[in-house]
Length: 291
Ligand SMILES: [Zn+2]
Image (spheres, rainbow, N blue to C red):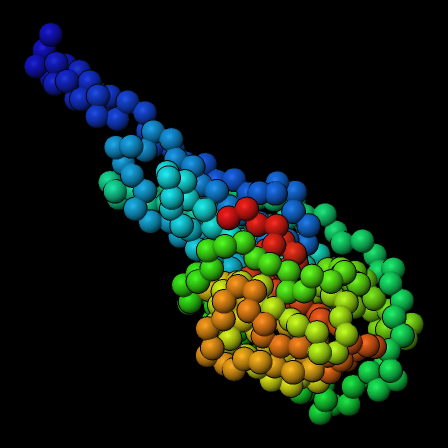
């Protein structure tokens, strides 16, 4: 055997011994077939990575950053599916290993469309008429402020550790994603969950968080938005009274306000909504999270 050949054999043998199995990771989305506005769990599993462990994961889904957390060899993050009609959503993770190797993992999820509008709703003519320019501008400003709370939440650490609760124990009168026709003219989607309630009945924080926004909005009436951190925000609308202030830390189940009929409503109830970053999601998906 020539010297060159034996060196080559030694080099190959060395390489095989050092890395008998290349580290590989796998990205999974659960549920596998989420609806528009769904909250999903992304799980990243590593195999054969014992010698080249994961040191960092950066991910995105539908344009929103993902916040992976590691426990017992598994890496998990919450993600969201946009409400507006998209055929598929891509989640992506950049996995950096101790050796410096970077892998890109991608998973595409097919999204079914929401069902067509079915619910007819007559509201007071003040709201049925098109809004004047000034009111339209006010609504746009208020929407932008609520959206900003969602965006900023990506900068806050996750503050909750127990499962999300429903803010009221009462029956749900309108579920998420229902199509609505206002006075037979304007069609919109119901992007929250309505709970029955009489004026003055309690409304509770769905989980631990920091109160990020309290105000009186044209459509939402008296509103409270809570930042739960890592992109998750919940909102409580049409309240008759607010019992917290911006900056307050609230505990899971703490009473934050009273049911009311402020803003654009046909009667007293709680409208509960949620966001992952800028994306509006079904708040009941937070309650269902196995986290
Ligand atoms: Zn509602």
